[in-house]
Image (tube, rainbow, N blue to C red):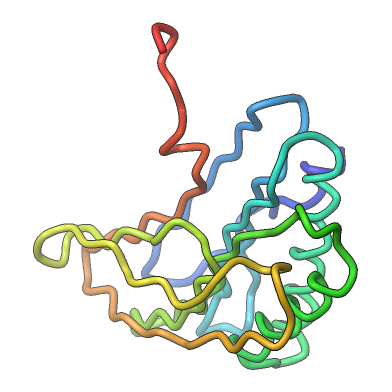
Length: 177
């Protein structure tokens, strides 16, 4: 119930874009999350995160990040400042062995995508020439305070696809290993 309560249902829409998401935890509960937050009629915030570990502790930490991101987005906090503040809170309150990766961006109706990547697997832009990974912009949240995150930008041309995922996709094994 904790994990399901974090996921947007239904997924908010932005004219001209199709947005789809799916979460399948490795165990009963996990620390992978996604969110789609309406900023205004012309913009959506998109987030994908992964708290280290599995189970209830990871789910609770992921919940903290999602709630913090929602509050910041809805209060108009700039992306780089928001991720900086999330890191400050996590670094001051979590166990030293816990951290969260987070990809947080804003997609506007014109196809602009501004984002901060805090140690998360890089999104893949497909359909605008050869597929390419979008550069990372910083380290995971919760490691140390006072780390500054950089904002990156990319344009999504008509027909392009942006793939945001967690390491659960890249580390998934077949039934044969």
